[in-house]
Image 1 (cartoon, rainbow, N blue to C red):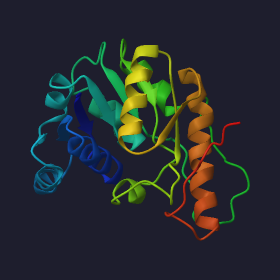
Image 2 (cartoon, one colour; image 1 turned 90 degrees about the vertical axis):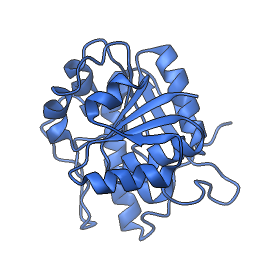
Image 3 (spheres, helix red, strand yellow; image 1 turned 60 degrees about the horizontal axis):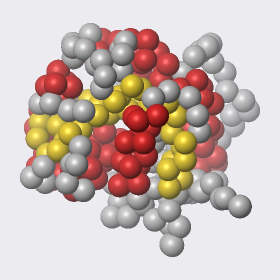
Image 4 (spheres, rainbow, N blue to C red; image 1 turned 180 degrees about the horizontal axis):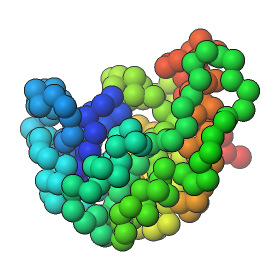
Length: 216
């Protein structure tokens, strides 16, 4: 069992933290403008969940999930202390999907991924990108399965041991985990995540749709 800190109490952070707590991991939820909401999430997640400040979530945990809006990332990280040698999992993306169904291409001035920006802001952290090609509504449902199929979550990072642990956490959530390489691949993974949201909306299947990577 892992000690997991959640920084970000939005739909992704609360859903993933709840799954892991119900799997028996020790989970600390943090960072919400509404303390009552944070306590409600932890209570619903069960006896292995608690609330704390972002700094406490880091201090108490071996794995940190950062599920924030990218524009607050630097500010929040400046308050949590060192993340050196921590496994830092991110599901963030700096690209915004277009829900009008009219998008052709993705306009952006970004040169690197949010995951790489996170790694630069947190020297010594073992950053892994994952969970950005699934939807919070699926994570919050009773099962992540689609019939007999388990959808795929791609993940990437530069530390092999950290990636192995993240792969187990992905599998704990009911997904097929596929390693797609080093952290630089987050540039493509975050772009895929944005396109995936747009495909889901345009097909009228959002959020009840998943990606499955087939092997042969």
